[in-house]
Image 1 (cartoon, helix red, strand yellow):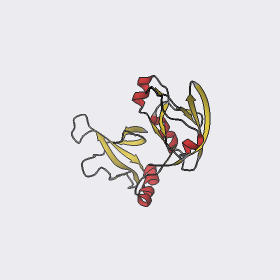
Image 2 (image 1 turned 120 degrees about the horizontal axis):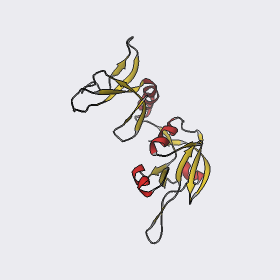
Image 3 (image 1 turned 90 degrees about the horizontal axis):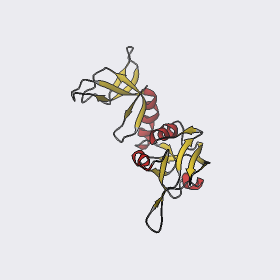
Length: 181
């Protein structure tokens, strides 16, 4: 039930905290229960001293079962997505925006077909805010991690309701999730 940040700064939810030693060479190795069943894959250690003593974390086997077949078949993880690029949360906070700011809508994407809008530049060079994602299927989205967690519950091809704020007004759009990397 713990959360950790991955190397690409994405939050991994539901990781297993363990006191099993995680040293160079066994990260990526199995975490087994007392009957020898695989329960996770060792991934990282948090060590205040920098030594190989601290709290270890493992990705749960349910996530591994979902990801590994994709890695074998495609050589990468295929996630459901909207077809947009996003502004980092730190910038949205600096701007005083609540929700996830769409930077750009990819041409031909499901987001484009649903009518989502990204940032726009005026003739004077001023950036205008486009759509801000505030909910998915009625559940509030406050930050990128919220959005990622909600999208991970779905599959490519699922239809979802995206709540947005545009020009101070809220509206809901329906779109089908597409494969993203």
